[in-house]
Image (cartoon, rainbow, N blue to C red):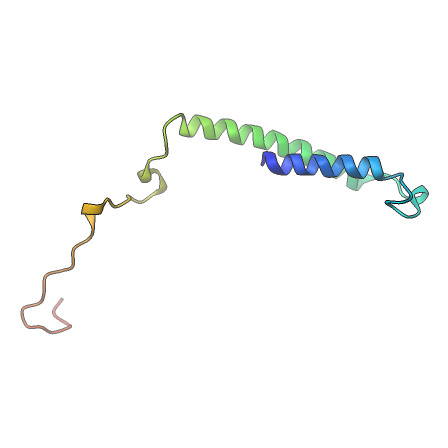
Length: 97
C-alpha cells in the first residue's frame, strides 16, 4: 500500500507541475485542475492512512516471530507426517471400502 501511495503521489506531482506546460499538454490554457485532481489527492491521502494502519495492525498481529503454519487454517505436514495409504482389502475388490 505504501508503494501505491508513493506512485500516486509521484503522478499527482507530475500532473500538477506539467498541467500548464504547452509541450506536455496541448491547449494548456483551456485545461485546469478540477475535481478529478482533487479526488486523486484525497485518494492518495486515504491510501497513505490505510497503509499506515495496515502496517501497524500487521506488526501487532505478527509481532517479531515468524508466522506459524497453523495460523493459515491448515497444519503443514512435516516429512514424517505423510498420510499413509489404507491397508489393502482382503478380497481385492475396488468396492471393499
